[in-house]
Image 1: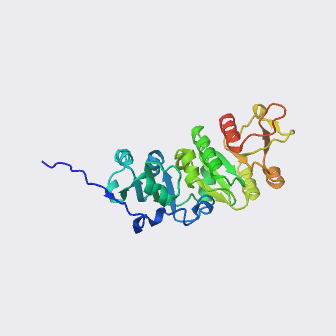
Image 2 (image 1 turned 90 degrees about the vertical axis):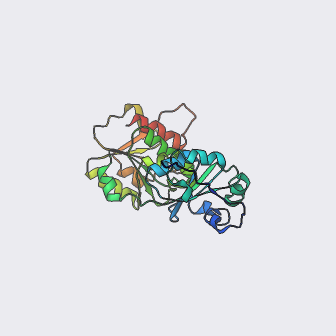
Image 3 (image 1 turned 90 degrees about the horizontal axis):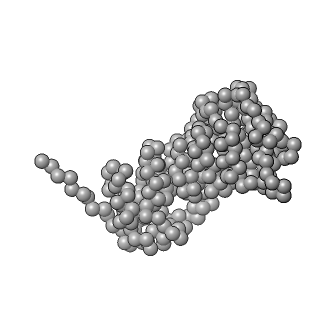
Length: 271
């Protein structure tokens, strides 16, 4: 009879250890790179839940830093985690990564191949498109809202933040993995191509002459809702290309919602 014997994790205590180099985000000013568009071959998962969902999505781990508590959580869902996991102190994780409050599990994964635009645009039933939404927190919230209400695709222009950015993944609670995404180079042309396929393309706008959301009747089986930046919104060319212009009714004196909050209302109401 063979008995399973736990393999002790390798502990790293020296902050100069080369095995920690991929985690030295502060020194590489990663905020300006991975927090925006896809800037490298890796992405960061903070916390055991996001790490678990990354593994469940088939993402390949490169290295993981954990506390003792983090190891206990990781061992529940990550087979052979000892191969790529290092036990570290909270101070070491904070000093290396620059995170003010480092969680018990911090993981690096290889970035998966993105969805092919042509394939995703032909297959989706309910999609969201973000145009010039450059805050990763908003992108993560939109992905979480889309997943919650059954939307199955996210399209992003080249100026929008990365759905796999650290903060986007953390805010989405890993739900970014549930909503396939693809980049769109020309939003207006993309919208027009979907119109030709019978997709309802719905521009969200606070304009007073837009149709109130509760009055919208959409017969098309497939639909795409578009969100612009909070300051500028969707540009006129994109707006003109859409089949519908829709507004969320609000109290007098309140001119708009945060784009993430607006996405929750729209994804629920227009599903």
